[in-house]
Length: 418
Image (cartoon, rainbow, N blue to C red; front, side, top):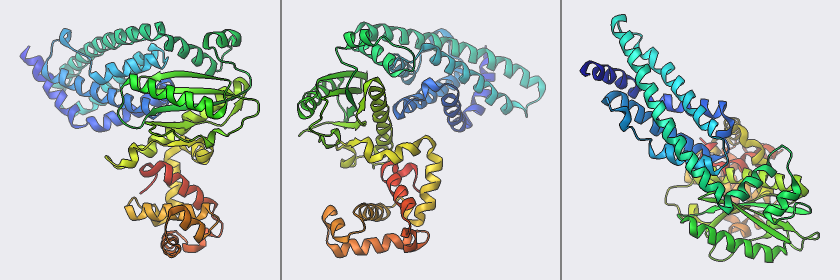
């Protein structure tokens, strides 16, 4: 027993020293190979947390010689299993992720032992395969049970039934529209607009339901909607659809957050029929993704990070088309803005001034009014901002690239800046 534990400590120590690079690689590989796990910023964050805690737990298990029967799945791993069950992601995707993780773990560990003599390396490899197999079997069994329990509870609830129907409607396969309309009590003809809603600050699931229903009531009245549909995505997010009248009296983009609103809102463009139901939801999800990056780049504790943001797809459409390749956007922003892409507070101030200036057709007076500043202050800031551009003021001779880069920098923040 002592010799086995000594072997475990030896290999565990080597893996521990290189764990950070391994975790980053495993997150990327898992997302690339299992598209069901790569939906949005929230799912990616939970995936990374689950992988991190699992790797740490696995190394501790190998090093400390813990009895496999006493193993307990990490909290983040169980939370991720519940999250996937609520999102209608198949359990097979979750288990496959663990199998990929096991294989990559061994691929990563074996080369770390190449410098050892053969008589030491072979027992280490055999022990590593045995222990890692025990770990994966135990953890998969626990997260599998957690997934199944959560799935049963979710489907049994009214929200779960609605979620299943909505998942079918948003999918590409055939769907019984009449049955869906009856189950959801929502018409699929006409014009639809979709919203994704989530808390701007900490909030219980009960308070979230109350806040979403308040927004639904106000939105129905403001837009004279024929019907509404609320479907929780999980405990911390909900989707809202409105069936608009044939002749809308107000555009959804003009819908402002009600007084005392505690929720962020990402809004899609109105669309007709089932195709519009789908496209508006897809656009709202893209806006949600952009806002997650925008809020994530805000300073911790910043009051603005907790202020509810209501953003329509039309405001960020160019950025939405870019975000599938953030690395390419980063290169585009840095090439287009040069030294103006710095992450300093001064850089942020100058970028926002130049963005507002270009949005208001290069009018110093209109920009001053929009930013509540003196015209001379705007003129001074614009001069400073343009001086930092790669070609100075000549960069604005054809300002399309600069405007696009400023828009991306505004919404994606630190993800694309120096």
